Length: 182
Image (cartoon, rainbow, N blue to C red; front, side):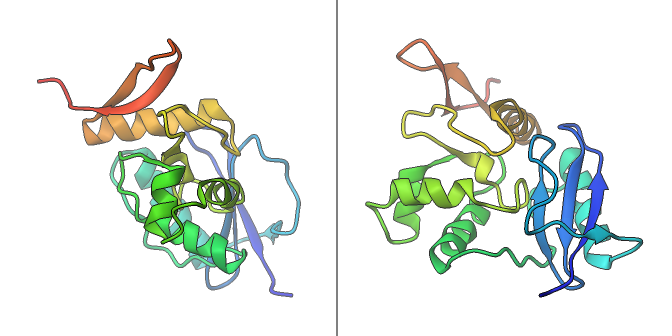
């Protein structure tokens, strides 16, 4: 079994827990996710990957980073890893539906399977599963809770100059791209 190390990171959405091997980041746990589990690691005095991940996440929260460059090694099936690679390609400040992600990986009928893989993404924020919404633009499940998902989307909208929040036809709040106002 590969040895893992853990580091807490204060953030605007609460305390994150970063988990890494000596070579790659394997998990980012949000404040609402319980401690422990298979990815839990030993407290790390100084692991370069954890330091780099903390620095890049700090830059993201300050609006200075839109893409992450640290090495990643998430555990998952081949299908899940395909979905996570597709999620990593969603540009900062943009949204995709589960169906759009399914089409992007060449599995147009697999929107539900994409949703399940999205839910098992161990690298929240770094692999931006928060950028995936329902086909109608509605906010759907998020491991950290919908309040954190909404915060992340609003943060990216502010930084990128986009406006997302509009009324869905049902009267509920949905997330749809609208051009920035001048």
